[in-house]
Length: 443
Image (tube, rainbow, N blue to C red; front, side, top):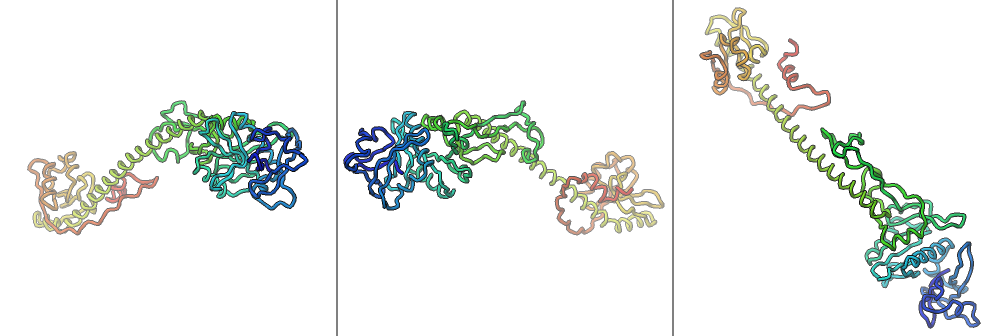
């Protein structure tokens, strides 16, 4: 069952058209005394014209004569559903003012369109493919690619319930109602429903952690619209929209609803609504990236400060530990009494280690210079010890005028590298960490 054949005198004929597409009459080749010189364009076997009615269809088609070899044209024409769908596609394209031809092949044979619809000015060609048989995703993508490489638009039509390739190429699913009504498009065409936060400057609809990406503060709304399948509508309207260029195949771009990357037929207004959301999402992502960058720099600066602080504490502890023995000897020679040295620094002595003579404070080992002003009167009677001239100058600048500050130079071991402190959710503050290191949390 095919629609197109070759007449010995008239050339290519299309029996779905009353004038056979060449200005002749069907009766001139239908049930004539002498068989009409009709042959298959593919296998060149004899053909004869057949007329039947099927439902509401008045069918004219060509049938191969007996013992015809297997050929691509014969195979393509198999199946009444396939036959009727091609009739519908061609009819709707012609109704829209376009020309439509069956079984149009590429010059190099790389493709053959079931129905090739061509605009009146010839600027557009659209292959309307009735794909009723199973086909792999790879094959249908390859066939679509061959059309595109030749500048031919394409839409695939199928009535199959399972369509693994519907998302991969411009295609729609159709249904032929049991009551004989017009064929309906049931899937493949979509509409976009926009949704925005009332205050677009502060997105309040999205509460998932992924969208905020750990960013502090409000974020602009990136849109919460989504794509959904259009309610079933007549195939005639869809083909007319293709011809009028009011619907186009489009890869969905709006994220977050599982549809991005799928091929769907959409109208311009839905494309524009989606584009508004896509652009808003891009702006939102840019703001998130900028905020994350700022937060990252702040976090790195804070970690660097913490490392420096911890390194300073470690250096202080080493200096204090290294000075204990020489300070004891110094104080003994200075007072004639062996002093008692505390185990660690104390806040009331500017985090320096107090040294006692006869139970009374006599000296402080390596107090922190920045803490001395608040304790100046308390520390004024005491001898302050430093491990270097540089430390002595810092301490003396903050101590009471004329206060005694002694330097005992000792060799200190190199400081170990201080790793950045971990920051779990239950992390302690810097002050708590210092207190633990100095044993102040046990006082």
